[in-house]
Image (cartoon, rainbow, N blue to C red; front, side):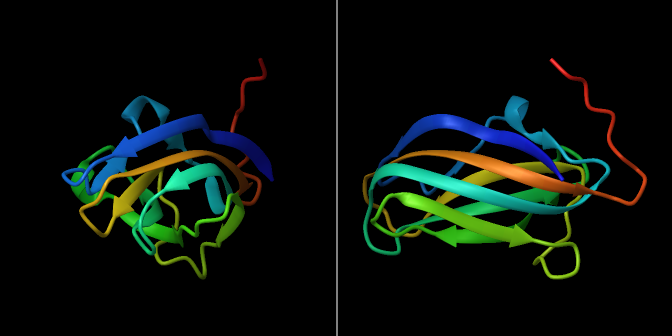
Length: 135
């Protein structure tokens, strides 16, 4: 398993017109050579209506918006804490492709905000271990 910081602490604020917020492209994770992913979403605080926000973990073979598909989701609760999402190649909604990103989806047109970070652990495919540069 290899562990990465998918998103450092950030606060996102939305209003009635913002129904989806996608992670910046330069922060998408290149998951080539991996087959399984586990994420830990840590929420410090949030303000939103019940059932109003969902975190979607998405993947695509290229950076084309039309190709991104949701691998797994987290429906937010009001209480801060950590939520673990396991997305294995055999059980995920969609198996991991090359690019991994997150997207916040709002189901109602109300103001919302969320402070969170995302850690992930990925399992490499067989002996196809990624060449990871050490800092």
